[in-house]
Length: 90
Image (cartoon, rainbow, N blue to C red; front, side, top):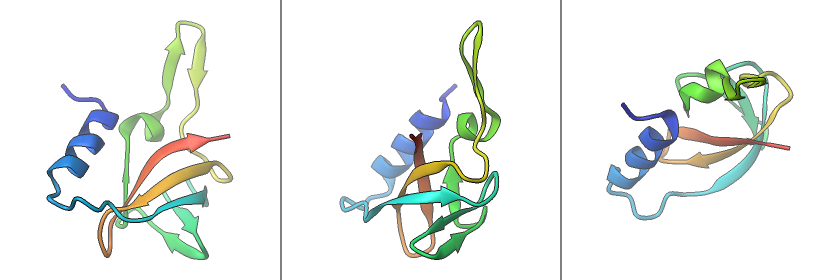
C-alpha cells in the first residue's frame, strides 16, 4: 500500500505533464483549505497527503499534528484547477 507521498509522486509522474507548474508558499485557512497569493483553495481544488490530514507518529513518543489553520505549506499547481500540498514547512 502506498503512503500519501508515494501517491502524490506517482500522480505527478503519470500526469504526462513534464512541466509541473508553479510552486507557492501558502497558509492554511482550515484543515483542508489554504490561501495562495490571495486565492482561497478548498478541498475540491487540493490534493493532500493522508498523513498531513490525519497526523502521524514520528516515533513512539512524538506525534506530528495534522494540518491546521495558520500552518505554512508548500503548494504546487498541477493543472488549471488542481493544486497539491507537498509539505508543511516552518
